[in-house]
Image 1: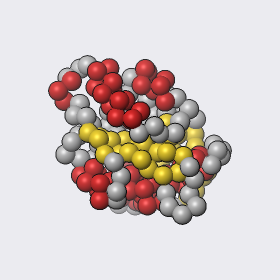
Image 2 (image 1 turned 90 degrees about the horizontal axis):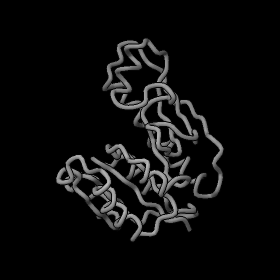
Image 3 (image 1 turned 45 degrees about the vertical axis):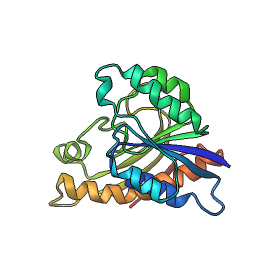
Image 4 (image 1 turned 180 degrees about the horizontal axis):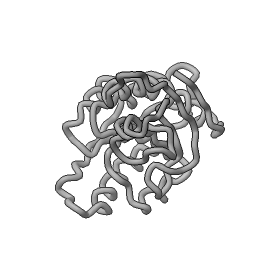
Length: 197
């Protein structure tokens, strides 16, 4: 059974989708949910689901990302995870952190990478006049929102869409795609999966 640690910064909807999927014959189980924000509401959801939690507030560390990450790593490594899932974790990780977990760290991003790495993905898709949008699960590398593709889900961009309506439709696909990719990944299947919502 693979041990999974999940990093969040907010409400943890993708984290909960992953947690709910890891039951029965699933080859993995969540052993830790950690956040850079002690007030992240996803921490309480994780505790209610019986999962250990940790919080390392990034703000007192100011610009010292290495010191923040050292404390976060201590919590992660205490849980001895086989896989680390970023699920709305809104801190850019240093190359040193990435190297420590390289090859076993996944991320979900709300665009069809390589389009629109970074923030404001839905507005950028609308501004470009794209006919479709979606989300991507990928292995994490030292390059932001890059790394081997593990899955993509596509949704149509509809007439009258706003960034908010498009984001809501993409989020539904995130909640389907990430658990599917994690199940396959934990079983040793790293081939990408493509879906259309």
